[in-house]
Length: 461
Image (cartoon, rainbow, N blue to C red; front, side, top):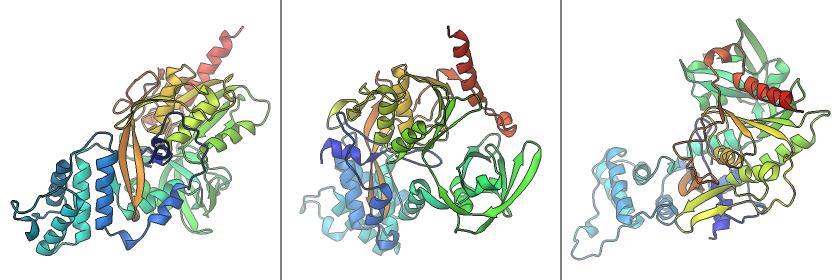
């Protein structure tokens, strides 16, 4: 498989709402690919069972594609450790392999499956459970991103993150973890049931029906907000010092990964929730369809953005701001350092003459961080907010019998060679958004972005 085709299938992943990455230099990004949900649907079978096929494919991907060379004996030994720790069994070697003088033992997934089968017979545990335990062992010693997500969670992930039109409320939640877990509304999707009901950004979510939202995990909250068309939902929120109840029907919600509108001062505000196949087209359409008059001053909100497809993020930054400039330096096992630029852009960057401010925080991750690092190194815009999450590796994402396997295949650096993994991207102007400001319905980081433009306007001749 060529590096370019590998990159096309690569993704990057993120915290809370998960996500995905990978790339190549001199890639045009013009090939029409199947969407992630389409690829996922073709891989599903066996109702979540872990099989020898799954084990073999995971082993092969780590052995051939992981960004560092991994010895087969290491994979075997960590798989055995996984059987012991997660499977809670004492691995049993098949009799045919006991005579070490007679056989040339090769550490591979076939030997490992024989151990799993023999151990399952001896312990009474299912082969599928022990297979998953072995895979967990294989991945746990590599890096924090390489992992297998089991079919049930994969199905939930694909439904929550890649369905554009779903039945629900149109509420995009914002998680606050300190001083305790609380949920606010980050975005109200346009023309959604929640907008029509009168809910607003930064309303604090209190109850859904009789369930206190603080008892829910983020994925559970999203499931609670979604539901069948025309099903009733009751939502209690706190707005300022008031508690309000809203009762309305769920309905079709057209989620967009990027959209824009005008602020009261005629500046442009754009929100990018993540990066998928449609993000670039949606962002460009939103810019071109802005009502006039408007200022050529743009605030791009990257908060609560887990990342997504890297070629989507790099294509966006090239089309809008950087053109053919270097977007990143990538380190791979097969090709060493790669000077990465997007050569598919054949026009002058659309926003080259605009003044732009990005807002980022610790929930900005993955492909979004790569985009911000490129913007910062080239001095194309200012970043306001907080240090980003710090995920600077690229991953090949593969669906195997309904499960999703993410294998780290490259290391991502900024155009100037700054490491992102574990460090993140530091803002040009650090601005905190305190919990108190959030409860007051104030967005301090957005306020500072507007103040920055006000200062620029005052200095203009």
